[in-house]
Image 1 (cartoon, rainbow, N blue to C red):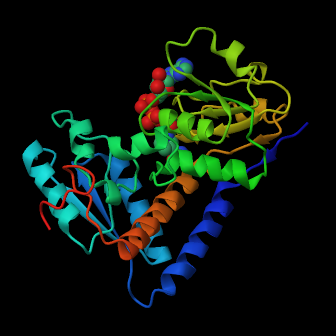
Image 2: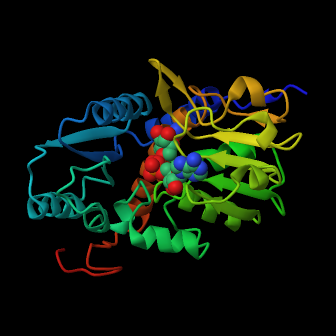
Length: 297
Ligand code: NAD
């Protein structure tokens, strides 16, 4: 068997061209995404520039707010409050990682839930946990789900093994698959005998950042393999999956690059459009003090 490739790049292009059409029909009333970038991390700068470029392609206004890596926590929280209260801003993201002296959880939690297009706030994370359709779902897991749906796999009852339990990928991925009736196992760096678990998986979603760790002997015939990992070895990009080894045993596989990466940006833009649409139809403010608080209006 040779696995079929799930082409994230072309799927993302399709999602973006649909978005572009919808936005051009708004007659100049365009969604706005604010991206907070703290410090000089080179990789973060590249990610943010990519987001801005893709946003421009679909007609979303993307403002980058660049802040010094010595910024204090209160000043950063105030910046978020200003964006929360600015009706021109529809979506807010804080590029991670933040410098060590800043409390990431506290900063993220300050984003208004209705502008939280990364879906990282406790509010949206809670909605996802309770399978509430109003949740903003983090872009990477949402992109993975769209890739699975693109191959028309019936997720109901499938054993999905997620490798990694981070707040931004592994955990929300597990919840999303559970919400789609998979039987989910979330694994991590303390998991004992990981290959014995992955061998029972119908679907593997790997987000552990270990270059080419997953081999064909770790998977069962016909498994669907989604590789979220982005690793750099000898200057070349690779995923967590040993692609050349696994592709002859899997039924579907995603490449790195050109797989989950482009889907992540497309889903961030889709979430921004969704936030814009919700705010236009229900201009109600959900501030950082809790759902339905009107303190600063
Ligand atoms: P993270 O470092 O926050 O989390 C990694 C997780 O993997 C942890 O839960 C850890 O327990 C687990 N892990 C580490 N080694 C393991 C092992 N040997 N066996 C089992 N589990 C192990 O990373 P993250 O932010 O979740 O990102 C994971 C990977 O996905 C990275 O390569 C990152 O670059 C990539 N990523 C890609 C996209 C995309 O758009 N494609 C988006 C986000 C992250």
